[in-house]
Length: 255
Ligand code: HEC
Image (cartoon, protein in one colour):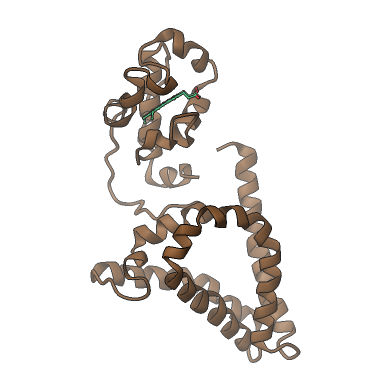
């Protein structure tokens, strides 16, 4: 990732934590002046006013999905936003803000324990049934949270550049359809190679022109990087094939 973007990411994460911490301190401070439900209501009215202008276009685009899953979303809004926060504010009437904030570090631990039990037992119950699978949840939160739910310690054998190329990239690059630079056509690749490997990889990962992200496939970023090397080198590039990253680096490289 570009260093500036990375710094931005860290700063945003830090800001979120600081603002969130402020929530507990403020809630504790006004606990005896504003009743919990009222406090929660106004907090989210304010948040809505701030977020809506940014979120509206995405919300519009995702409206069919929202309509399809409205029951699940209403359930999550009720337990996640309405009940959770109201109860936290209620707690603020009798306990310190530090205790209220303890919820934050314990939540991931509880989630992991519950997830392990839930997945281990193969149960599919609860709100929204199928929409509660880790994959479905991952897909839903991915655009927002920008992280992946993957077992980093699980052994993964990454496919080679050639395998990935044959699985998807050849569809367009093989014959040079839809304006795709043809495989092995040095003339078509030369101007693109000068942009550098990172730029080419970025195009392959995020999509460019008629090319969908990852060429329409679902691969690990390293696999795509290898395919880019394979493809570009046939067109005269001299890039080195990236090694399989260590699990931790792999998770980090996920951006
Ligand atoms: C659906 C067709 C299609 C598939 C599948 C496809 N590409 Fe492409 N690719 C294109 C097109 C079209 C372009 C030219 C885009 C442009 O410059 O507007 C392109 C351009 C590229 C470029 C040059 C990008 C740049 O910045 O100039 C790379 C690298 C690339 N593809 C890699 C891949 C890899 C790797 C795969 C397989 C994982 C793949 N492509 C699969 C259509 C495709």
